[in-house]
Length: 104
Image 1 (cartoon, rainbow, N blue to C red):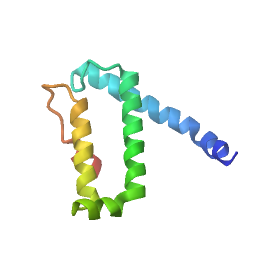
Image 2: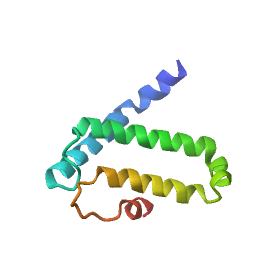
Image 3: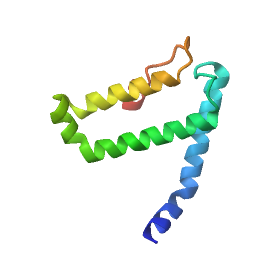
Image 4: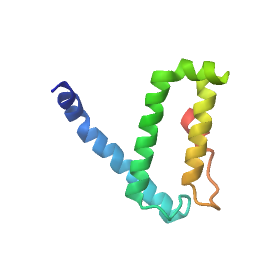
């Protein structure tokens, strides 16, 4: 019941956010900066689920990850995001480094 109330209040914003990201994906595919072999709707679902999973993992295991690998969680997760985002790029596209854009 509580989740419905909370989720229901955010649903319009989430729909708008998803539409904005979908529009951006479609533009990236059209201009050649994003790969064309994946449907925009699938790329949107992959993007949102990847981000959600990473946020959940960092929240649950941030300190544990740092101890396990002996480096900061930020360093590890930055490289994971970079690897993921590089996988969405078109093979010959030249883009601004997405991590530097996210960090500003």
